[in-house]
Image (cartoon, rainbow, N blue to C red):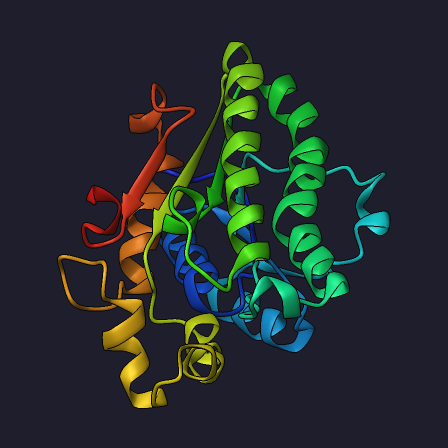
Length: 248
């Protein structure tokens, strides 16, 4: 796969899961990829393997991102965390952390990257949203709020960036086979009062017409296309990859 030679891509949360699959897809397409991740060692290992660069960054520390300047042609806002609690038991600081990582940090990174994209007349912003950016589920107030906010941010970026050759889109997968999903199984079992081994079938896939988890490589293939010249008229959109969940 080629077509991104000479392009510079930044992928947050790029050391594992969807971010890793995106980084690999971009590298295969010829882009120079920066792996941005809280886990510096993991980012270094990925960067060495794909011939990219590593950037250890704490996206929860938004104050440190306020004056950032980024030279990137492609920005993938992928990093995220999950926390499963009823609203009345949801810790306020945890709620704030999820919004900082998945809404405030993407705003600050987009803000840092747009001037260079505008100058070059070309840019791609791809925001890893979720089916939860379009639909709600109980016990995920912070995640759902952050992803709904990201949808709006992405559309505003599309409207402002269009005249400058910059597109902005969301990708909205259902449950993907990643460490983020695996880590929430115990919490899901607890709040739903079921066994951990029943969580995937009874909670995660109950709304999907196709009863399996999404693979990271499948998401990366869509992200890769949105970053290409073939998608230059695609902007302000939200692409579902949720097995039919949002068709309900």
